[in-house]
Each structure stands twice: as C-alpha cells, then as structure tokens.
Image (cartoon, rainbow, N blue to C red):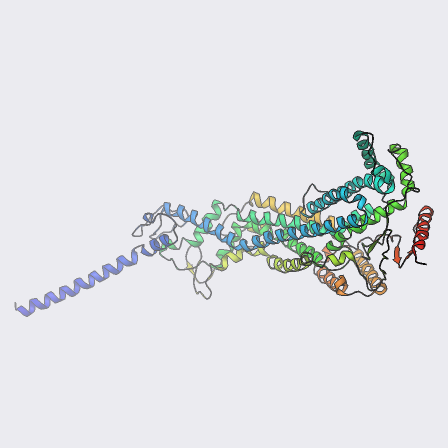
Length: 620
C-alpha cells in the first residue's frame, strides 16, 4: 500500500474523531445544570453544592416532579420554598412601606398640630384671666392647663378620655375660686380658721356646683361645642392608629406550606428543566398570589371604607369657616369661660343664698349685693358670631366701639399663626395622598404579579410546562371564590388578618355612629340637606361683611361640603344643633346696649345699677 493511501486514511480518522468529540461536548453542554447552578448561586437560595452537575432521572421531588431528567432534588426544593416565602414577604413589605410611612408621618403631624392648637388656646384663655380676672389668675392657670391637657388627650384618640368629664371638672374646680374671689371677695382674701374647714367648704362648693348651676348653661354649651368640633380630629387619630396596625399585620402575614408549594411551582419548577429565564403566566401568578393573600384581599372592603372616612374627616378638618371647625371651637373656650363667670357675677345674690343653705355660712362671708367686686366683665357670645369680649374696669380708658361690620375678633386674630393655618394645609395634603391607596389591599396580588410578567412574551410557564397562554380559570380574591382555586387549596385565612378586619369594621361602625353619619333613609337625608341649605342662605343673607383676615371663607367651606358629601352621601354629617341665642351685651361708647329678652328681673336690676355707674363716669 502506498504512502499516500496511509496519509488519506489518517486524515479521515482524524476528521471522524474530531466530529465525535464536538458532538460529545455539545451533548454534555446541553445536559448539564450550569445555568441552574448559576441562578441558584446568584439568588443566594442555598448552598450551591446541592445543585447536581448533570440532570438526573427519578429524583423524589414533591413539588416539581416530572417524567424527564431534572436538575433539582429534595434538598433544593426545601431551599426554594424557604427562599420564595422570604422573597414574597419582602416584596409585600416593599409595596406597603410607602403606605406605612404616609400613615405614620401624618399621624405624627396631626398630633403635633393638635398639640400646638391646644397650647395656643390654653395660653389665650390664661391671658383672659390675667387681664380681666386678676384675682383668679394665679389659681386658675393650673385649671386651664389641665383642661387643655385633657383636650389633647381626647384628640389623640385615647380610649379612657372623656371630654364631658374634663369640662365638668374644670367648672367644678372654678366655682370655689369665683365664689370666694369675685362673688364674695372678703372670703377669698382672709385667712380661714383652719385649712381643714376651708378644704371642706371648697369640696362642698365643688359637689354642689351642678345643682347650684352658678355658670348657667355655659358649661353644657361648651361641652356641646367642643364635642362637635373635636370629634372629627379624635376620629381621625383613632382611625389612623388602627390603619397603621392593619398595614403592620399584612407585613407579618404567615405564608403557609400550601402557599409555599404554589410559589415554588410558579417561580422555580422551570429551573429544574433548565429554563431559568422564562416567566410565569399571568393567570397562574394571579391565582397563586390571591390564594396566598386571601386574608389580605378580604381586608379590601373595610379598608376602602376606612380610606373614604379618612378623606371625609380630613376634609372637615380642612374647613376654614363655620362654628364647628376645630380652631374656632378651641379659640372660643375663652369666651365660654368669660360668659360663665359673667353669669355667676350677675346672679351673685341667688348663688350666695343657695350656697349658704347647702354648705353653711362661709368664713367672713360678704353679701354679693353690697360687696363691690374688683370689676365686672361683659362678654358677647363668640362661639358662633365670634365678636369680641370686653372687660369693663374702673379707669379713664373707654372701650372701643364694637360695631357689627366689619367683625373684629381677638380669637381670630390669634388664629393667624402658622401652626393654626397648617392644619388646613396638612389635611388637604393627606386627603389627596391617602386616596391613592383606596384599593391597596384589593389590588395587592395583582401588583405583586406585575413584576413577574414580561410584556410581549409569546410563551410562559404554566406551572407544569411551557405554553402560549394560561388556560385555567382565574378566580376572584374572596375566600368563597378561592375555594375553587385550581392551583392551590385555600381553606381559611390568617388569624391575625381576621382580627384586624374585625377591629377595622367595628371601629368604622362606631365612628359613623358617633359622628352621626350612619346610613339613613334617602328622604330623611334630602330633607336635612334642604334644611342646611336654607339655614345657610338665611345666615349668609343676614350676616355682615367680613374680610379674609377674619377667617370668613364661607364659600370655600360650602364647596368642600358639597364636594365630599357628594362623593360619599352615607358619610355626610347631619345638621348640627344650633345653640339658643344668648343674652347680648354690646359695649357702645360709654353706655351699655342690652338685649333683655333672656334676662331675669334681678339681672336687669344689676345691669341698671351698672348703667348708672357708667353714666357717672362720663365727663361733664
């Protein structure tokens, strides 16, 4: 055989071996688990040594089992289940983080604003006592401070606070001071025989205050005014606190083993086939996420109602006019206190006679008709009309002319502060921000699936194979519908979420009842709206002109009521009961113009005596 023939045979043998080697290399590359091992390591699912180098047949898999070769084994399935639960909970926390920050931040901001309002009006009320009732000032300051501390506690949503009890305790403690320092000045400035007897006498005055009624209807009117005006702020604080607890409960939701199996089948069973880049079908993801978060979806109904209620409450706090706004009600406390003391001064003889019958004759008692007080204050009701209160004391100065137009009010001038105006801005900001989360819990499963779905993909993972589209039924998120979920068995919801749902539903029901916004008949609601519109037109027609600096922004308030009330008619508050018209005492120059429709003969006698004193002060 020739030499050239041997060379040709060697060349053919070399080519044959080369192609055999290439085929073996390609087969080995196609059958290894390199991509699975890389994904396993990059996602830090577990020890990379668990991933086999080559696919194996007959692995005892519980979730991702199939007839062909697999790159997974039982320890890998356990690692996948632990990892996918942690990933899902982390994604839930990332979606709810902004909502938690919104609720916590605004809850803190509202509390700071309420505290600032209470502190400002507390100082304003103490200023009244300093300027008009110097005999009471030093001892009344702690009473005023305690009253506004109770108001702050009430606004914070504390379950044990009682606004009515706080106001009654304030007037109970105020009565002994007014009785000794103003009605019978000699008692307040003389040393009693013993501290024990003085304590007993003061305690008797406190206990009989409601029976004697030295302050007339003003304590009751103050309770009504504060209750109506502060209730929205208190309700907002309570609902914000519980809303934060509900969001925290969703962060801690337990993903059971059945949920973990579904998540592994959706996200990692494709890796066992070597398909690390394919995405799950949208229908598969929605079914599994709704099954895992059925307790969260069940919160959707009460959560939507709570967001609507939060918006309504924020709109009420943002209202800038009307007697039931929080700022004006707090600013009017000083007027109620002033009117109450005035009422006691005008009825001094009757009060003294009644007290002596019940508690006995006080030490160094002076008859209130003969003992001249240091001064006597005339105050016009400022809760609704917000006209100024004037203190008349002996001296050369003449009170300013309190003409009805334009209105000038000491309390409203104080409301020009930045802290008071920030309540409107804060409420409007929160009202718009919380609206974006109205359907948060209902749509959370779909939001979690958005990141899993690739737009424009032609094939997807169905949980068992690669398909063009998901063919199974997509069930609703309710517990009843989830019993028909084709991807997982859903029997019950998380106990923590069930408790959160019940608390939220109960609080909403309680708040609607306390605010008077419970569902009513359509006819009754329309009738009340017509009465409100009619009364509003009458008040607008009879009112005097006022500028924006005095806080007269009735049109903005009306627009806000219509806007919010139209969105949620069931949350529209009923018309507030109006206070009875008080006896009006206006200071005009050096003479008193008095509306005597509600005054008793004894009061008229006292006022005529004062008019005589004032006439003697006029220059000749």
